Length: 256
Image (tube, rainbow, N blue to C red; front, side, top):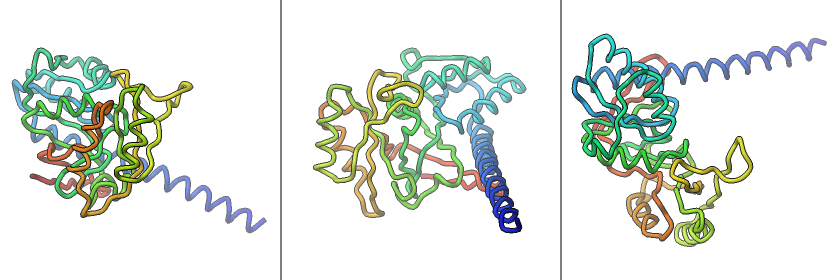
């Protein structure tokens, strides 16, 4: 009886710690996102809006500032999710076709190294995210502290690659033969079959462990040259600033 009571208490404590950890990460995301919006958003900007859970906090804060300060900003989404988020907050929705030059883009990351190179695409929106980021004068990354790494693949062990469906097997074999690691076709969670992006493509998750000496820029360029590859989740030399929310409520800023 005594041992069962101890085991039960340990189980409850573990569950509570897990809940606290999750709440702490959400708080860190919120703090980082809000600080980025507070420092970078001003009147008459065209802003690229990224995708993912951290961006929800950024858009919430953006909507608050637009309403309280009567700001005129136009938001260009990077995904269907981002578009719906913009509309739900009654923000002005734009398109890259109409606004091909953006003042700012705010987005999250799955991992970010000391030079602000990023791995993105965990949510499947890497192509549109990269297009919007490339056409923005200034890309700001917002994330919790777990995304802040010494080098890419230090913590996040997979690199998403968006590919044409007809070529996914050939691309899988070619990347593995060139660089090693293992590529797996990302499967959908709520339906049978593979995950399909907003652009009608597949995603190969490349499980690869690099080091501080790995030439991710060269790897990125080489993979992009393979026919059938649409783009990679390696965002090399694109971000100019990053905000990482910490467990104690502070924010670490990094600049390039």
